[in-house]
Structures are given as structure tokens and as C-alpha cells.
Image 1 (cartoon, one colour):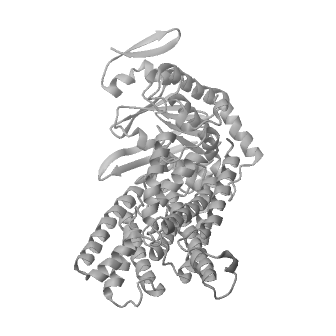
Image 2 (spheres, chains in turn green, cyan):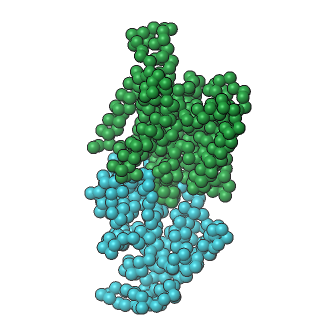
Length: 325
Length: 254
């Protein structure tokens, strides 16, 4: 099938998912009332579900695109947005905020978001600093330093949890599972701005990403400014991930899986891959979140549980069938 | 003209290359040969600007290669590595070859009709036009090397540096790739610089021999001189028989 047709089909499917998902949820809404100001239906549809849909699209899109960039930069098919320790750094920040006891609400915008972003950015700088000590940026060192920071932060989080009281410990656990349920409007506005800039920056490097994925020596010989490209992309991705993780906690599998699926189903050419991955990531998280709302209704599951439960088997199916990774 | 002047390169205080100088003129075919670990691959990586030497300098047409803008340098010298990593991206032959056009593309990376014609021309030149919509991962070793060469040609650089491109190929495929390179040199006047262990092919290609040993330039001679002075013996510390077979020089280990 032609790439354009496959892309068109993907776009239609994604839009269908996005349009349908606000109509899925534990509460039955009387749709006749949704435009009535002050009604419960109006509140659920607009302030809860549409807001959450937006959060899902942005979170899923940013995660998927981040995974794509890291896989290309590191030429490593299992690199994820979290490989470089940003998420665990952000989680550590959030955990520190919780035990500091100064919170009014766990998910208050300026408290946990600020701490989580600070934690994320601190680990970005640390990892980048470690890999540039020898004067020249090495992607392998970047990867290894990221993994080390990841484990170190995770250990610190466990340390904090071990000594925290049960209530705080639960709050940290709850954050670490990852969910878009408590993302505030302020967070969404911030994510919208970040996603916009992030997308433009990544897309402007689409030619470089094509060549980087082939290998650094060839990229050099083609005239790509590798250090510049990787530095810009690394910081842009990391900051975007810090913002998303601060809002939603770590959500697994989207970032690793979606780029591969799009590569297998549509194209490896970044000109197409970048927008398709962003869209598919957003749609995938929306459908997972819809499932999270209804599977155990009236209780809700954190979406991160669904992404991995749905994602892993489907991914394995594609690997076995596609044999192209 | 590429001129390499007194370059040295060390890794962790171990000298990989020690005070090497030579020049390569436009249209020349140069084979870089020598025992394993002699520094051949390092030398070509320095020449393409992938690595940077500690001392000395490398210039193309009188200008230091690190003084060029990266894209301008890519228009003068291209590089074909031993193998590629396809773990992440699996492009089609046409898409892969298009990456060679990188130094010529505008900000948006639009492949114009003119650009596409050039890509097709080089696919045709390397006899892989019929494979243009196939994915790289589905190709044989020889076909992959052709794609790799086509993408380097698409860079339209007059100097092409190849690092052991025919090492893992069967005799027929190796022969075809070698002939392709010889044609590119003799008919299209590309300057072909290859790292190779295929000594008889290098003799057949009538190339100059840049012989490396222990990080130093051992000798830099024409194929005739290599043959007459039996330089292969001292270079590899073994004895070869030098035979004239059907008007071609051939060496075989004694």
C-alpha cells in the first residue's frame, strides 16, 4: 500500500478515537444537557472529560515523540523517554515535595509540578554534564549515565518511601504509577505550549534524525552537525518529558512502542514519522484512558497500567509478525 | 587534492597514527593497505573529519578540512563505512540514497524533481534502480553495499573514501563491487580511496598503495613499484609469489 494512503488511514483512525473518547466513561451523561451551564453533565463533559482528553493527547504525543527522538539519537530500539533518568529525577522531586509536608493538595500545580520539574531538570543537567566531562559528547556515555541516575534516583525514592508515613508513602506510590486523571488546567496550558515548541523543534531536525539513525560516522560525513543536533534535541526532549512527568507521573510503554509501530506500519522517514508518531501517541493514550475509566467502573485505573497491559502484548505481536525492528 | 601533513593521533596515550604525510590528487585511485591494527580505519576517519587529529593538518584544495562548513566539506569528500546500523531505522533504497543529498537540501528538506532525478541517476549508475522501493533490511549484503555507495555518490563529492566495503562479500559480489569502483574511477574520474585487504583487486585497479604499518606510513608507491620491489613481503612480514597471469599481476602467499 502507498505510504500516503496508510498515513491517511492512520489519521482517520486517530481522529475517530479522539472524537469518541470523551463519550466514554463511568458516568452516563445526558447529552441533551451538556450545553446547559451549571449542569452536572456539562461539568463532566467539558471540565472533566474534554480536559482530560486534551491532557491525554498532549501527554501521549510528547511521550511518543520523545521516544522516537531518543531511539534515533542513540540508535537503540529500546530507548524510551525515561532512559535518561528524567522521569525518575522528576519522581524524586515529587517524592521530596510530598515528604516535605508543605503541600495542601498532592497535585497542586505550583507544588508538585515545580518540584518534579526541578528534579527532572537537575537529572538532565547531571547526565549531560557527566557525558561531556571528557570534552566531547558521547551518546553511549549519555545512555549509561542516564541509566545510572535512573537507578540512583529510584533508590532514593525507595529510601524516602521506606521512612515516610503510610499516607505519604501511598501518595508517592500513587504518583509513581502515572495517570492523567489529576492534570489541572494550568498543567494543560503549560503542556500545550511545551508540546507546540517541542514539535516544531523536533520537526525542524527531521532530515538530521533520518541520518543520525543510520550512524554517527555517516552523519558526520554527510555534513550533519552532530553535537549541535543532539544537544538541542536532548534538552528539548528532556524538558518536555520533565513537564509531562511532573503533571502525569511516569507513563510507560507509549514512548517506546508507538514510534516502532508507526515505523512498521507506515514509514521510517522522519518527515512522516514525526507527525504520525505524535498523533498516534495522543490517540493511543486517549483510548487507554477511556479503557481505564470503564474497565473497573465506577472505580478508575491509572492509565499507565492500561498502556503497559494493552501495549506489551500488541507490541510483541508486531515484533513477531513484522520482524522489522 | 587532499594533502595530509604530519598528522598524529592518540587514544589514551597510545599512538594510533604517528607523523603521517601524503597527498592524493584528483582522479587517483588509492588503496590503503597494511596489517590489522595499523591505523587504516582511523586514518580515513580523520580524512573525512569524523575524528580530529592531535597534531598536523589535513586539507582539501589547500583549505583545512575543519575550516570548511560541514556541508561544504561533505560536497568534497564522502564516506562509505564497513557496515550500517539498521536497528532503528529501516528506510527504502530510494529514501536511504536520498540521505546523500543532505548537504544540498534546503531547510525543509524538500526533495525536488531535480534532486530526485539525481538520486535515480546514482541508483542507475550502481545498478540498483530496480530495488528503489525495497526496504534495506530485505537486501543481500552486496545490494546493501551498492546502496551505501549510491548514497555516497549522491553527495556528489569527487573524493570517495570506502572502509573495507567488500570484506564480507562472496567472490562474485566482491568482483562486481570492485568493478563498479574501478569504473567510477576510470570513467567518471572519481578519486577512490579504499581501505582494503583484497590485494589482488588493488593491483588490478592499478591503484597507488598507501601502506600502513604500526601507525606509520610504511610506503606510498604505484602498483608497479609494489610489484617490482616486492613491498608486500616486508609490509606483511611474509613471503608472496609475484606472478604475471594473463598480463595481470597477481600475488599469492608462498
